[in-house]
Length: 420
Figure 1 (cartoon, helix red, strand yellow):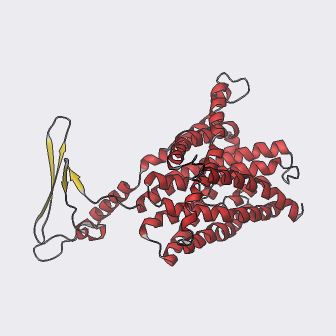
Figure 2 (figure 1 turned 45 degrees about the vertical axis):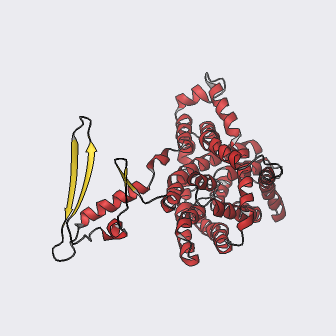
C-alpha cells in the first residue's frame, strides 16, 4: 500500500478524536459553561468509578480468552517497558530542566504513562473499518483489534493507577506538617530529627518518645524509645535504619489504589473471559445472564466520549500558561513523540527477530503504537483528585495532544509500513 493511502487511513481516527476534543473545549467556554469546574469534576468521578471500569470489564470479557492470553504474553512486558523507559527519560528531563519538586511527580507520570486506553480503542478498530484497511478482512481485523486494545486498556489502567498515581502522590506537596496525637496538636520536630538520613543523629540530652495505644481490653501500652549520647553521635543499627526507611516508603505509597475501580474491572473482565463457565453464563449468545453483559457494555460505551470531552475541557485551562511552561512542554513532547517511539521500534523489532512475538501485523502495530501515545488522560483526573498541579497538567495536555494530531498520524503511517 502506498504511503499516502496509509497516511489517510491513519489520519481519519485522529481527526475523530480531535473533533470530540474540540467539542469539549467549546462546551467549557464561559459563553456555554456546560463543562464548568463542577461539571468537569462530577464527570471525572463518573468516569473513574463507573464508565472506565465498565468499558474495561465489558471488552475484556467479550474478547479475551485463555488462548489469546497465552498468545499475547509479550504485551504486559511491552507496557511495563514503556513505563520504565518513560520514567528514566522523565528523570533525565527533571535533571536537565530543574523541575520544581512539587511538579516532578507530574513530569514522571506524563513521561511514563501513555494513553493506552481510549486512543488505541478509537484508532486501531477505526483503521480496521477503513475500506483500504491494510490488515485484511474487516470483521476479523475488527474483532482482533478489540481483543488487543482491551488488554492494552486493562494493562494501562493497572499500571497508571498503581504506578503513576503513587508517583504523583509521593511528590505532591504536603498540606501540613503538624503532628496530631490523641486529638491534641503539637509542633513538628526539626528536620534533623525527622530526616531519614539523620535518624542516627540524636540530641545530647535524653530523648523520650512515648506512644500510647489503646487495646481492645482498654489496657494501655506504652512504647518508650531512649537515645542517649554521652560524647557524640550514636549510630542506629543499619538494619533498624533500613526498616525505618521502608516504613516511610510504605506510608507514602497508597497500596489501596492498586484496587482502583478500573483495576477491579480489568480483573473481573479477565476472570469472565478466561473461565469458560462464566463466558457461557454471561457472554455467549443466548446466555442466561446476557442482559448483565449488555448493561455493562452500555455503561462502557459512555467512557470514550466522556473521557475525550474531558480532555477538551481541561485543555482550555492550559491556554493561559503555555509560555511559562515552554521548556517543560518541549521536553515532554520530545520524550513522548521522538525518543519513546524510536526506542519502541528497536524493542519490538528485536522481539520479532528473536521470535517472542507471533507474526500478526495488527498486533505488532499496536505494540509499536503503545510507545508513541500522548500522556494518559487519567493524569488530569489524578491531579484533580490531589488538587495539585492541575494548571500545569492542563498546559501539558494542551500542548501534547495538539502535537499528537501530527505525530500520531505520521507514526501510525510509518508503523503500518514497517509491519506490512
